[in-house]
Amino acid sequence: METLKRELESDAEHQIFNKTSIHPKQVQNIQESYQINVDEKYVADKLLEEKSAIFSHKGRMYEKTTHSNWAKSIIKRYENYGVRDAK
Picture 1 (cartoon, rainbow, N blue to C red):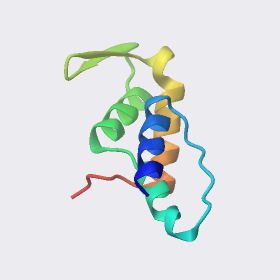
Picture 2: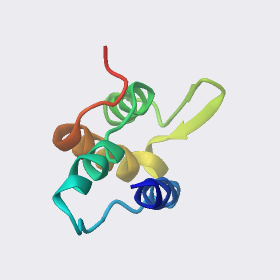
Picture 3: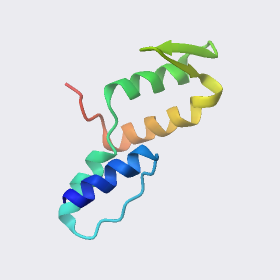
């Protein structure tokens, strides 16, 4: 399981969200790794709803045109896997 967790972390860093489970016990870890965090959900929603082309959040600049595909993928992950740090 530790090797799987390291692989999932590496995959996430490279925006790879496609993993084959060899054993049923691995499924939960894989699905949990696809969950988004609250901040990603906020930024994705803002990108898709915001009228202005550019906005800043926590010192980072986001451009609607450049980041809209990323935002759509975040929303799909949210719909399928949920939020990892939701309270």
